[in-house]
Amino acid sequence: MVLKSLADLKTIVAGGPKKKVIVAAAQDQNSMGAVVRAWKDNVIEPILVGDKESILNICAANNYDITGVRIIHEPDTDMAVEMSVKMVNNKQGDVLMKGKVGTSSLLKCVLNREWGLRTGNLLSHFALFEVETYPKVIAVTDVAMNIAPNLQDKIAIINNSVGCLIKLGYQMPKVAVLGAVEMVNENMKATLDAALLSKMNQRDQIKNCIIDGPLAFDNAVSLESAKHKGIRSEVAGDTDLLLMPDIEVGNVLYKSLVFFARAKVAAIILGAKVPIVLTSRSDSEQAKYDSLLLSAAASK
Amino acid sequence: MVDRVLSLKKKHRIAVAWAQDANTINAIHRSVKDGLVDAVMIGQSDRIREVCSNNGIDHGLFSTMDAENETNASEKAVKLVNTGEADIVMKGLVGTDKFLKAVMDKDHGIMLPDAVLSYVGAIEIPAYHKLLFITDPAVIPYPDLRQKIAMAGYAIGMAHRFGIEKPRIALIGASEKISPHFPYSADYAEMRRMAEQGQFNSCIMDGPLDLFLSCDAKSAEIKGIMTPIAGDADILLFPSLESCNPFYKALMLFAHGELGGLIMGTRKPVVLMSRSESEKSKYYCIALSCLMA
Figure: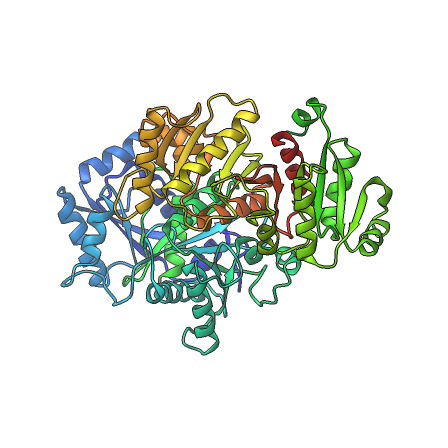
């Protein structure tokens, strides 16, 4: 199956058991709306860990009725985060969500060697975009986590993302390794990595997907552009997953899709024992909601 | 943009290297008909005539000149500019490297002395309130400080030609912090200081800034970051070709953007577009080159 829109995530989630989302330091104005909405829609079961009074105040101020939602009172932010992570480790939660706590503090707990959520895999950011002008959802990685991934990191990032797409129902997703050009150019490291990744895929060193690259953005998403350039590729024009060369490229692309192309987006962190939802203040409420859906769909 | 060119009431002569693909011919045809340019089409003239007749175009509208191959066509086009018979060069179906080799040739090329060769694009996006200039989506993979300074200068110059007296130029990065993780951010700090000292022509410069702070006034407000750009950038300078190239392509394919762009650092305007670019974008490029000629 291939996702046509982010709304398809709801169908996937509705078909399975309801996922427990643990919100760490849940006294958070920015994420509460999306959490409550997802709970009301019956697609997740939230567990709010944090300062109970603040949580209730925020809900009261916004007219959110959360009667029946489990709240675990822990006024200290660091303790709340630690407790949330430990609960996931004890299989009491399927998803971890960031509340009112800095990203770096949360990740420090996630990466704790004794009680964190390490799996031995690299953590990476995974985003799904719904753009009017592309016939299906396009996944993009990594636009926010790894600054300048090397070849080994890129393999891990692909494996994380392909694993997630398979959980969403994809079979052999098509992966385009992005470059500024579609030719291998020894002066552009991204194109060399792309060529290596493609070959490693052909030799089954990276499985369960079809990788081609380097592909410039236009060749990756437009069959017409690829044809015009005479590129023969199974991936060109039909990309499911677009691998970014580094965070500078990813960041700009992500923001241009959201701002200029009015894309809908859902994003999670992969590579830990469970998906992690890290939303930022500037994300729309819809994006936070869709990210929750994605996390639930990706947690199996 | 096109109106601005027509209002100049000055027709230019454009030499097109290896001008035998339908996209290029259609774009030139429209430019000639609209009174922007006269054109010399260099290539296999029988092939050019054939494409013209297939597309219902009267090939008598432009002159043709025979060339044996891509390299030869590029050299001839550049030569026409050198002899004053043309004042704009345009790439047709020839590969970019072969074309640029002719442009940059030490003896017969048209580079300005010691100039940095770079590219400035002007992109029109329905979701943005004005034309956005970007650099460099096509030529310099990883610009150093000297190249970034030249790129900024070219983009500012182009914005001035459009009548923007004090363009706002955002130096693009993944975050607004100067950090050793991002080497370009140190270059940006240097450039900002130069701008403060008036070493750039009239502009407002800030960076590193992310795309939201540069182009979305609301986001600048939410984040509470004070920047004179404040979501109203005229120019975006990117840290690498790798980031600028997918940026503009994403806008063209996903955000209904149209791009015109020019090679900079040459004595006369050079129109260089990806072979796969639309006819409309090629037309914009030609209009832009007239404005800069």
